[in-house]
Amino acid sequence: MQWEAEALVLAARPHGESSAIVDVFSREYGRFAGLVRGGNSRRLRPILQPGNMVVATWRARLSEHLGTMTVDAGRAHAAEAMADAKALAGLSALCALMQITPERQAYPRLYDTLMLVLGAMDDEAMWPVLLARYEMALLEEIGFGLDLSCCAATGVVDELEYVSPRSGRAVSRAAAQPYLDKMFVLPQFLLDPSADAGDDDVQKAMELTGHFLERRVYLPNGMKMPPARQRLLDILTR
Image (cartoon, rainbow, N blue to C red; front, side):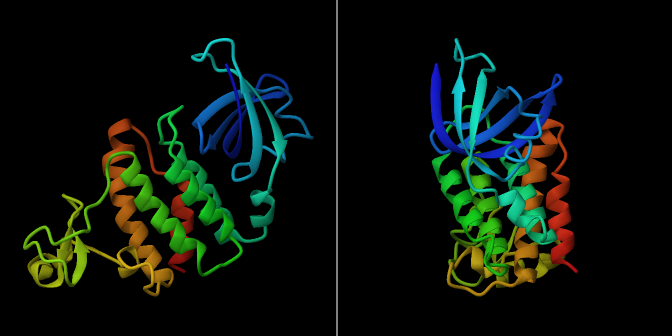
């Protein structure tokens, strides 16, 4: 079995003296791991930094094998973000979050959303907004999407300003009044792509998505939320 595709490097860990086990994510094949011979060498280590794009070729005698992988360098997003702590934390968070997707299952929508975020990394105001929308898409794609279509209590579709921490459904301003201390704020840019969004809005959006990622994905699988994501939240709150 063999495939070749443009892919995002998610993680790389040393294996033996000079090789590395590398996780990549491509539009056609989803998340795949493979053994890159020489992947821990001086030549390949910079290419295999999480966040970089590569052209990956994966080969295995049987589909269930780990397989070997060769890579050709693409855009080095990790090097470009190195001087910007906020961008580097965002890039690291993206790569870490993608590792909760099942292996060897294609998620073309997630890949396209990832490419939008990466393509906007030089726009300091835009990429955090896209990252928050990416987290919404991630929840939906893995089966835990939030329902923001109407109020969970009344069914109205206007003035949706809160989200129930239990159901993940939107709640209108009026219906939420008795429970404001228990509700998550629903940033309007998650409903309306044309709405303005600053760091405070992105922070509230990530608190919302983070709650459901942790409660519905990470904790049930005995995992912890990625530290890089918390670093990004810390930067947004400064």
